[in-house]
Length: 201
Image (cartoon, rainbow, N blue to C red; front, side):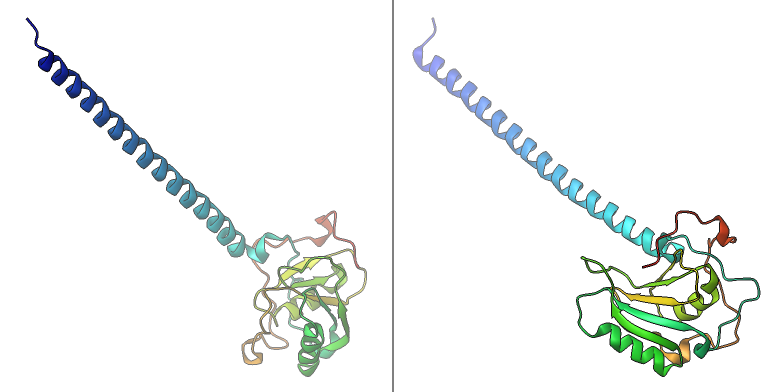
């Protein structure tokens, strides 16, 4: 014979067990969800950091550019024609850089604004096939500039100031005139093989 109190006790025990199991499962699922979200955020952050770091450590920031001509040396600054274009939203920055380069002896061809709707991320040294040594000579004045060859036919070098620009390399740290130009690693040995060059603006 089964007593009602015994039945109620067993039912209460089953309900208690079910509630405990439900609570344990809920906690476990919630913990797993939190772990997955944290892992996803960490992974995405690591991937972005790795991509940024890889890009920065690549020679010339991953942009193809020619090697300096054989036995090329840093040119006398008055022989190098330079124009400065401001690719940032900081008014007067182009003129300030132009004055500094003029004080260092470069043959300045003026300053202006770079034709772009968005701020240029990084400073670029733009030159043509006939101004490679000139481009390297100017690039030596900057610590984080990209060298970019376009299809211009003359030896004019454009310095397009970007948002990361802070200051020029200190004069005493710049490779002196007449010293051998050191090409960056993975440069293109023959400039003639470089196709689809950007248009000269």
